[in-house]
Length: 469
Image (cartoon, rainbow, N blue to C red):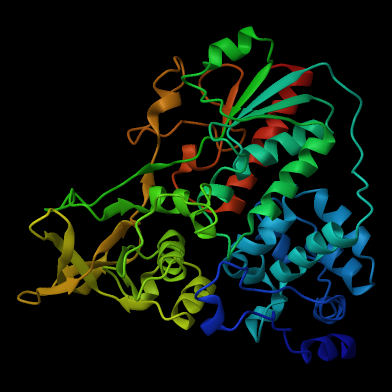
C-alpha cells in the first residue's frame, strides 16, 4: 500500500513540444518524445494492476502493464518485443491513437488524477528501437504454403499482414496509391505522424517477408475473383472510407472549395508541405475556413496555417463539448492560433464576379434535444445570419465508402450506406474467402479500431487457412 501511495504521488511526466509560435509555421513533429530517464520515471507510476482496465480499453489488447514494467526496468528491447506481440504499428499508435478515451481512460490513476501516459511510453519504446535497436525480428511460424492478399495498406491491412506473416502464411499487400500506408500517409499530417515513421513501420513488415505492391487499384487493375485465380487462398479488404462528403448548399461549386480528403492528400502524400522543394498544386488561401469538428478538420486547419494562411478558422455547428476531435488536437490547434466559430452553420457560399469564393453566409445555432448520435441537436437561431469572409473552404464533414471495389465484386453484401457487411466477431463477408475490416465496414473511425478489426480478421483468416471455412 505504501508503494502504491508513493507511485500515486509521482506527477505525470509532460511530453516536450515545439513552441506554438514556432511550430505553426513548420511541419516538424509537435511532440518531441521522452528521454530514457523521463520514460522510466513515467513508467514507475504504473500500479501493475492485477486486473488492468487499460488492457480492456485497448482494441488490440496490448499487454500494457507488461511493456511498461519493462521500460521501468530499463529493458527497452524487451518492451518493444512485448508490444510487437499484439501491435505491429506501435510507433503509429503511440502518436495518433485516442488513448484518453481508450487505454488511459481505463487507468486506475485517472479516477483521482492523471492516467499513466501509455501512449507516450508506447511511442518511446518504438522510437528507441528504431534509433538504437539491433533490428532483430520477432519469431515466425514455419511456412504453411498458404497465400493471403491484403487489399489496402492502411492500419487494418497492415495489421492483418503483420499477424498473418508471423503465423507462417505468404502475404501480399495491394495498394492503390504509389506509397503504402493508406490514411497514415495521405490523411494524417507530417506534424502529427512523420511519413518516415510510417515508411519504417511498413519496412519492418517487409523485413518479416510481407510483399507490398503499389499502384494496384483492386476493382480496376484486378478483381477479387482474379486474385483467387492467381492462387490466393484468402483476401482481406481494408480499403478505408475515402469518398468525400459535401454539404450540398448553394455555391458549393465555386472555385476555392474542396474536400479535406483532397486537400490533405495533396499536402501529405503528394508532399505539398515541402513547398517550394516540391511544387505540388494546392490552394494556399489567406483566409481559410474548415467546416467540421473532428480530427480531420483540425488537421486541415493546422495544415492551412503552416502553408501560410493569415487566418485559419474552424466552423462547427455544435459546441466544443460535442466536438469529436481529440482533446489534444483541439488544444494544439488553439495554441497555434486556429480560430473556433462554434454553434455556427454555413448556409451558402458567396462568389465574386470571376466565380471564385469570396465568403460564406452563416447562421448561429443553439443546442436542442439529443439526436441519434447522443449529442444535442443544433437548432438554428432565427435572424442570426452573418457573413464570414474567406477565400478557401475545406469541407471536413465526414466521408463515405468508395464504391470502386465493392461495385465490381459479386456476392459481397453491402449495407444501405455502401459499406461492406462483415461479421464483427470474425470479419467474414458474405463472399467465401473474403474478409473485411476498418472504415470500409464501420465508416470513418480511429486507427486503433481499424487495427482491432484487422486483428480479429487475421485470427479468423488463420483458422480458415489451417482448418477451413
